[in-house]
Image (cartoon, rainbow, N blue to C red; front, side):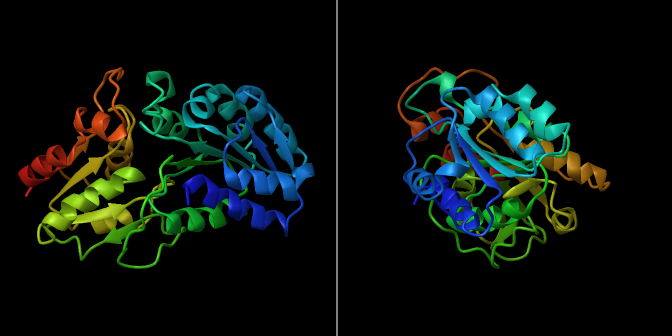
Length: 304
């Protein structure tokens, strides 16, 4: 099942117990959305292709004591609505959740206007925001449970694809914010990522479990409390992100580790500083823009 359908189903379950939840959408097309709209027509508003107005409506509903979820395609919910995100849920600290679908190159068939390669940097910069990027269905369910209880601004970044599950070293804990894949980090090169790129990191980890370890950081803001201590044991860090090079996950990791007076060797592997106009599908675009399995493996080997 697609990540968006899993998340929306969790919101639908919450609506059965909480009547003060509203769901606003700028898009149709998710099967789970049809179910929510059918069961709770008075709690659902379709706002058309008017994302900015949708956020203002959400802020009004939240000011009246409601929990509000807004749903749209990632490039339009993030960059188009950045001022509304700041002035509504940001400045007024409102319980609004942005459900952003199609992060990174998820809409590879639609061209650069639909790529979402700056959304992470933009929404992470909103003061007080909480940022989530699940890699598995288990992540989505855990995050949904936490967001439904949140009383502040949340931004969840969902992949357009149906991503496979991962055998984490321990059950996913939403409050913890990350999950380790593999054994201890002592003396190893640690690959850190979120969303789809966790699965690419997992491929590298499986090639050399003696030298590599992997972390799925599904909540990067606020940064997980214990992660800095865990990473202090590693040899080097390779951060992989399907975003541009400015303000991406590697920036987040370095900023937060430096706040803990920890300055490890960190290498960033992300999309290049350019707009991508090539066609050919998501995997092709990743492969020709520095995020192929071969590129990541070669970079990781240099850190051993």
